[in-house]
Amino acid sequence: MSKADLIVGLQWGDEGKGKIVDHMAQTHDYVCRFAGGHNAGHTIVIGDKKYALHLIPSGVLNPKAKNIVGNGVVISPKDFIKEMEQFGDLGGRLFLSDKAHILLPYHAMIDQARERMKGDKAIGTTGKGIGPAYGDKIARVGHRLGELLNPEKLTEKIMAYFKINASVFEAMGIETPDEKALLEELEGYKAVLAPFIMDTTQMLWKILDDHQKVLLEGAQGTMLDIDHGTYPYVTSSTTVSAGACSGLGLNPKDLGKVTGIAKAYCTRVGNGPFPSEDLGEEGDILRKNGHEYGTTTGRPRRCGWFDAVAMRHAVRVNGVDQVALMKLDVLDGFEEIKVCVAYEVDGQDIDYVPYDLEEATPVYQTFPGWDKTQGIRTFEALPKTAQSYILALEGMIGTKIGIISTSPERDDTIIR
Ligand code: IMP
Image (cartoon, rainbow, N blue to C red):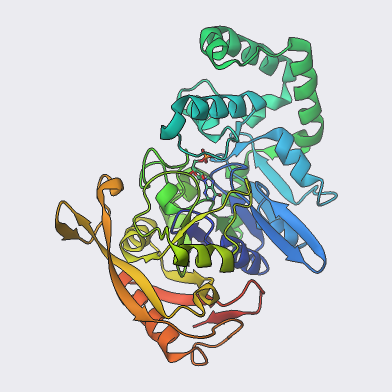
């Protein structure tokens, strides 16, 4: 029996998981998504073609790999079908869990209406309907992908759902769908997706029993986890490694090597605490040099320094075996580089993530910068100050930095 390798984000998402997943997908037979929805996203360039991935696992770009979307994911059929269109025939290479939940256009409307109503307390969601879709799942009023196989029955259930929630929807300005149009919409989804819907849990057990190589692809990041992130400024799923078990039907013993992805600095989109955010000129330089704009929404990302306290929390909660440190070259040219090594809360320094991170102010240690790491492919060839920076981070986070990325190019990667 083989064990599944896992990739998870250690910060607030957008750590550059795409480059590592894409690289590892070349050597795995199956790539599986276990959480999130089309709020996630990365772009992969191959030759002169650009692919935008939101829900389909990155294995789609390796013709030999097969792809599973697990029960822990919320799937917008409309967006999924649009994404599929980039790839031609995916028959036999794509499998969708019948237990994944369906995200429909009204979920996005609810998401956006709630955000509007919250005003300056808004979470800053992607507006894709992720919270309402997971909310329905947990409240046991959601609809599973398997139900798409019987559009008449699903239409009836959705109409009943609208009836029960009529007053809430009216207050939000959300209209009840026309029953005939809804049925047609669902029939259209069924026509495309039915061949891909199955019991992916049984399938995955068999794949592991057959000693095949499986890669589990996380979405978002640890600090956006529903339990272990900066609640309520989080996404609505379990983004940490435990989510890979519940989101695919695996048990903890099925998991193999855990690679945690982190940038050499930090970013965050949306609202919520971010202690090491740099609102000055240096934050602007990080945004410009790192092209820090959201893939899904195009929003400018908030930028700041590496947060070693949040990282230790992430390493522990995910059981990280090695860290891949991305975008080291974005720090090229800084005279000094800051690292958040503790938080000050109520006049005291603490070395853990407190209940309310909003209360924490960063305690920084400063490191000398360097001229250029861009494109360097061995640790020894890095400037001495960059080597010291990495070794110091390793000491602070208590795990090995096994991979260092020095440009978006696939080959500009140091493996230690
Ligand atoms: P939601 O997932 O759309 O509900 O958004 C909740 C929070 O998670 C917001 O702050 C979003 O900006 C953030 N978020 C969701 N998906 C991603 C992602 O893929 N990268 C970075 N942030 C994300």
